[in-house]
Every structure is written in structure tokens, then in C-alpha cells.
Amino acid sequence: MNIAVAQSGGPTAAINASLAGVFTEALKCDEIKTVFGFKNGIDGVLRNDAVDLSDYLKTDEDVEVLKLTPSTVLGSCRLKLKSFEESKEQYEKILEVFESRDIGAFFYIGGNDSMDTVLKLSEYFRKIGKDIKVIGIPKTIDNDLVATDHTPGFGSAAKYIATTVAEIIRDSQVYALTSVTVIEIMGRDAGWLTAASSVLRTMGEDAPHLIYLPEVPVTKEKILSEIKEAHKQHKACVVAVSEGIKTPDGKYLAEDNLSGNVDVFGHKYLSGVGKYLENLISRELSCKVRSVELNIMQRCSSHLASLTDIEESQQIGAAALRHALSGNTGEMMVFVRKSDKPYEVEISSADIKSIANKEKLFPREWINEEGNNIKDEALDYFMPLIQGEVSLFKKNGLPVHTIIK
Image (tube, rainbow, N blue to C red; front, side, top):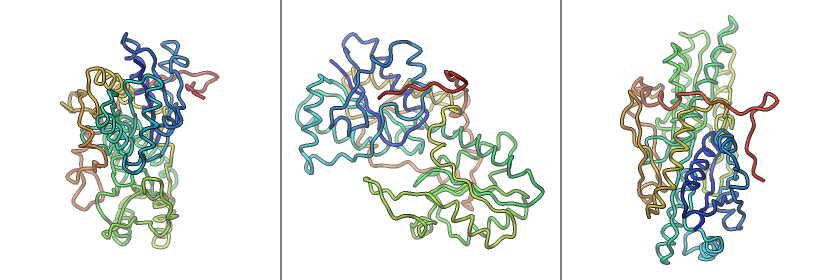
């Protein structure tokens, strides 16, 4: 038989390592003839737009370059697969495409919304009695998939954030002038990424002095009061905020500054809380105030990737292939942490029904009572995930990337 892989959702520094894991493990299996990569996720499946990955991955070096290539080499999509009742045609088209290519297993690498697709497709194939395995491979920098200790892509994003925040701290301390710097970090409903900036304490940093996550509602009055107090104590006050911090009534703090536009999944397009706070603070404090939005750079900056993240991402991709060949379907591969010190994880699986359309928030017990910083207990969780350095393939002094057209 042949197998198929597709990628979906936001890009990361490690998503292609999972693709490499599926591909290299498939090469060991005599029963697998071709590994197809569908371009642009489930949208590419519907268009029957696929490539034979062996046309691009001819040598071991090709695979190694792929592992360290940021973003999704197969492209992505934000297409929400409708229910069978809403669009029978979509499912029949997917079945037609898979049967035309003799595909016996489909691997979908993605986050929350992608796992919804895994659920719907696996249930459809079961319902009609087709033996096509569907396995989800986790991916998201947001680290908000339930059932897994962490998600591929998170460790590298966390490492990038901590490194960049440290550099911003150095910059903020250059002048004798007092200042407040607000750093806006991704995180719509879960604050894992912003919380990861707290690992700088292991380097002796006391900044960020304040950390605000979506899990704890805040008011602008509370934030202003706490920043004023922190500013009295620190010449260069640094504040880390998740883009999705909310008020007690459930609205985004910078709601009035948002465009109001939503994606196909109904998510509001976020950004601007940093600039909102900058303007707010500037009116209250007579000091230099600036905001920095890390934006898309935090998603897939492979030059600061965590080696642990890359290696685990490849391993979980390979495990997904073995899991499907063992007869499993309708599941997502997961990491189960056995120990923090020494760090030890094992790869297992969980029923996709317990994962799809659910969200794992940052634990409240790891946030201080005031709701404006992270407790040290969280550091044991974060630290193993950002360890190890990658060695990029370079040409003319620049990284070499795998490009699939």
C-alpha cells in the first residue's frame, strides 16, 4: 500500500522533523511503496494535489535538511472539514482520492483544529467500512493539545522567546533613563509561550518583572497599578503579555483595537495588546515606554531550535507510522513525561475523541496568587524542552532549506 502525510495549521520549527520521521520509518517497511505528501493540508487532499516525497528526499542529507527546515514544506491550510451531514461530497471526494492512490494510512500533522479533521475522517472510514488508518501527529507552538505532556514545536518556540526576551532586556538597560518595555507574545487562550519567558530566572535574570497570561483575567487598572509599582523598583521594567489576555467579562483586553475579523474556525485575529498597553502606560508614566511584538518570528525560527524538540518530533512521527501499521486508527500520538530530572519521556497514543476540540490551559497552580508572574515550580517543566543546539546546513553563510514546489 501507499501512505499519505499532510501538514496543517500554523508553522513551527519542528513540524518537518515529524514529516521526516514518518518518511524515514516508512523506508524500513516493505509493505509501503510510496509516501505521498499532500500540499496545503486537507485542502490539498480535496484537490488531489500530492507529491512523491522520495522525489525530494533522495539522500540522508536531504532528510537532515528537511528536519531543520522551518515552516511547513508541504504548505498548510485553515480549512475546517464540515461534518458528514453538512457535506457528504467532501468525504466522498477524499475517499476517491485516497483509493485512486491506494492509500492505506493518512497522517495529519497539526494542532487543535487538525485533530478535529482526524476525528471526522477516522469516524467516516469506520462508518463506511474502509480500512484506511488515520493518525494525528501533534504540532503547535501553543502547547495546548490535551493528553500530551507537550507538543512538538513548543520547545523551539519557547527557546526563541526566552533568548529574544533576554536580548530585549539587555537593550532596555543600555541607557540611564528609566523605561517600561512591553513584550507581546503569542497565545490566544493558553499562556504557555509567555510563561516560558520565566526560564530566564535560571540565568539570574529578574525580568520579565511581570507576566500576564490569558488564564487569569485582568483589568487595565490592575495592570497599570502593578506596572507603576514594578517601575519604582526596576530602572528598566520589562513586562511579558500574551496576545490573548482577557478582562473578567471574557473580552480581550485590547478588544476595541481588534479588526473584528475572524478565521474559518471563528477565531478572532489577535495582535495589538502590546501597543495598547504602551499607549496606556505612556499616559500614566513619564518615562520611555515601548512595545515589542514578537509576531511570526517566534513560530519557526530554526536557527534557535531546540535539539530536544527536533529529535522528539522526528521520533513521534516515526512512532505514528508504526502505530498505524499495528492496526490503530482514530488516535493521536502523545508524549508521556516520566521524570523531570533526569528528563525522560515515552511516546504513547490517545483516542482522538478525548483530544479534538479541547484545550489545555497553563496550570493555575503555576501562576502566583496575584496572577502576574510564574512560580518556580514551572521551570522544571520548561527547562528540558529547550535543551540542545541544532547544527544547520549552510551555503554562502545562510541556512539551506528544503523547498517543495
